[in-house]
Image 1: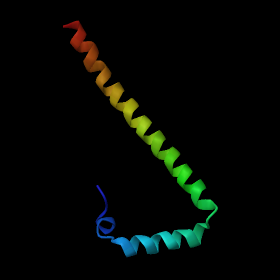
Image 2 (image 1 turned 90 degrees about the horizontal axis):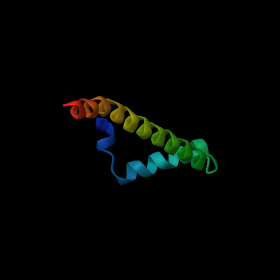
Image 3 (image 1 turned 90 degrees about the vertical axis):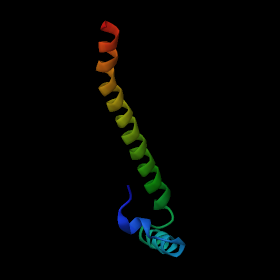
Length: 66
């Protein structure tokens, strides 16, 4: 679920935001920033999958005992 202000942004607003980020971080830092963001997102998804597997694990063992 996106916050309300992110859902109302159009093409020009995204372009302005991108240019501001480019000015703040510079062209050399953006790939590093995106790489770190990607690794963090990958780690979060992996953790969510592990948590889901852990929650479903007891249900599978109960079904086998019946």
